[in-house]
Image 1 (cartoon, one colour):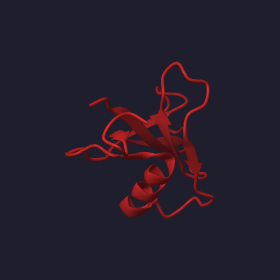
Image 2 (cartoon, rainbow, N blue to C red; image 1 turned 180 degrees about the vertical axis):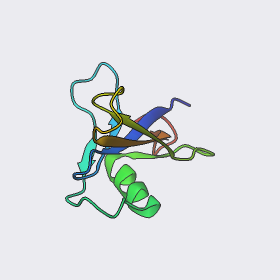
Image 3 (cartoon, rainbow, N blue to C red; image 1 turned 30 degrees about the vertical axis):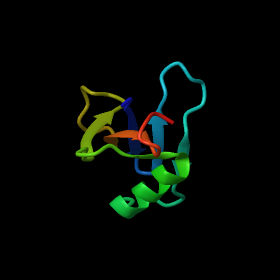
Image 4 (cartoon, one colour; image 1 turned 45 degrees about the horizontal axis):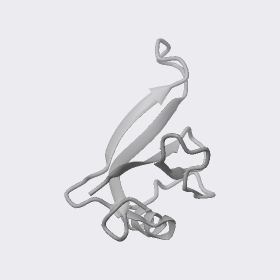
Length: 93
């Protein structure tokens, strides 16, 4: 079973969820037009389903943070969540 990575990110603005498809110019993407609250697990599952994916069995969302200037702790933080996904038919979409 082929798996991919879905990521969700925000730099303080709207949240975006996308499925990473290396080598492809366009990735399946959804944008929430709100800055908060963070999209719930149920909202993320619905968006993934609409994009043709589902969270892989046993996978869980993990969170990390990044910034435009990793050496400056006063720069805005970019929050990134990631999870392993698969196509809704059990394979890659």
